[in-house]
Length: 226
Image (cartoon, rainbow, N blue to C red; front, side, top):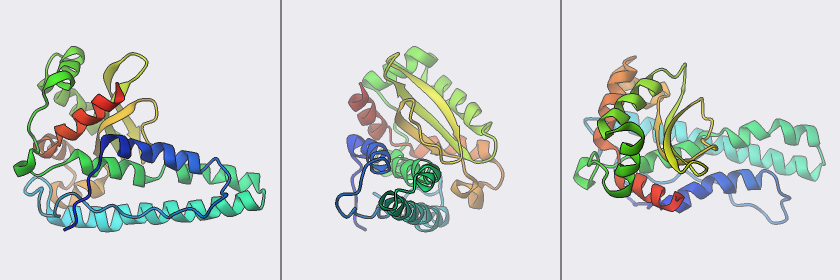
């Protein structure tokens, strides 16, 4: 399988490229968004996340978000040409709150155990976590509690607040992107991320997923955010 690297800075640029393209004139023909290849096989995260979940989540759900974003941009481009301000405004949610952003970050959050998945963070990232939560274990416990409590579908995030220079937990509904902080780690708690394996036991999924979290990617994002 083709392996695609997700550099922290490049992944963060998904935010700026998506939103900037939604607010500027289209003087050149834009390139379409495409579904990124995973940096591991569908079965690589088993038994924590099954191959069936990964395949459906990536090939079906993420692909649908990519398709939707491309359609929204085509409509927005036409609205710009037509000087249709009402349509331009109406299309903003489809451009901003599209799952392509969150999922592109999410896949890079994970790694097979044989490639370092689940290995705890160290260095400055761990120090920053301990400063806010006393220990990594306390952070995970608080993260899981807050994220399990998300009503309906949504995400749990560890983000870096550039104003306070602190790491903080943020939960968001639906596919809302994290724009108040630099995203460091995001966990998907839409049912399609876990239901085939964990049924309605979201807390069990959250407890298990840390065994395949790629803290190296999180640390790289943290370093770039400072």
